[in-house]
Length: 206
Image 1 (cartoon, rainbow, N blue to C red):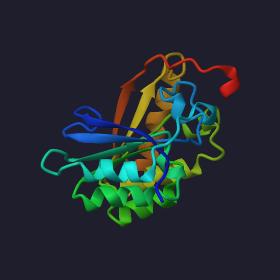
Image 2: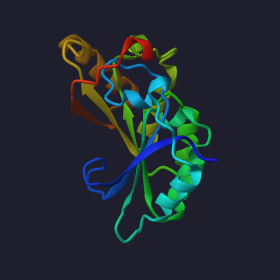
Image 3: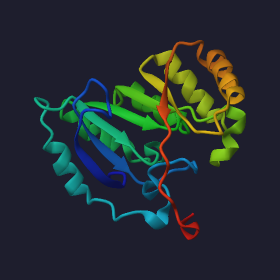
Image 4: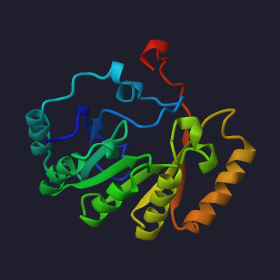
């Protein structure tokens, strides 16, 4: 059984810099970020019908290592799905690399995936100072902290922050820089992403 895949980008040269990749988008997310640009993967009322498992398997099987370097697995939040390892294993069995996009809310699964060599690189969102994570409906930021510590220890991932106008003020960024140093010791790459106006979501879908 595979996690719910909403769709694929067959070929991307920008989602994983330096790699020729396909992108798999998984449905479902445990965060509610007001600046999210993929609401159709977050709010159940907007979910498309997921692809059948056999169609997902056929697509992965069609990816030639002579053309592709790997697959980016994104969402939504992939790590909310216990069957995520099954999808990653399909990719690895093709001799391809995996880049996992995650919000860091499931450090136990993330650690397992790295230990079992199912993830080559993780791109983890560092959204706000941890004491502000209630703004994205995160029950406890401890899991996010643990994921940051894990990636700093293993050295096979990086953090990324979307700079939202009026939210990521100088004060907030100063707090994040101090927190980043304290948690990771500066051992992780940290990149910043440009904010794009998100799609409007009707109140009844939230």
